[in-house]
Length: 179
Image (cartoon, rainbow, N blue to C red):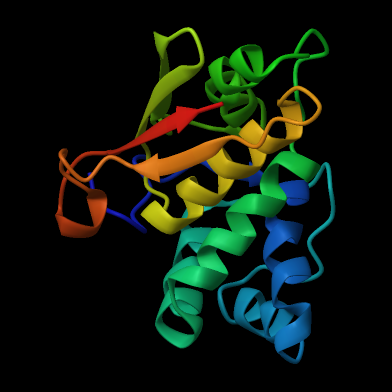
């Protein structure tokens, strides 16, 4: 599996997720709309569906022009716009449902997975095997943990550097979350 390469040609992503790109890049002179348009995504709207490969191509261009911090920021916006199962109300349930939310916001073929496992009473491991960039997934995991953490709790998310990473050709990245 490679970053920026859809697993199947017909996969689509919901416009609500696509808008996270536009929102994050608004402060950079509105380049989000221009980058998306260069890849065939014009005026994205929630509930409309767009080519995942076109979106990934836009991600690649964003990565080349702005770097991983922007991709991480885009990822942090996704939990705010994604469709979540209504029963999600705890950090464990939220982290465990990222895969379900991911599948609710994509359609049309194989898209990969987010595998969740508890590692202890206040810790978890997420293995992200999908075509999105590592920094983007880090942002998703960080914001999901923070959004659903108990009041007064500040979760910590770290890339597990003892495991391989998609940035270096691996099939996935692993993140460790403590709270």
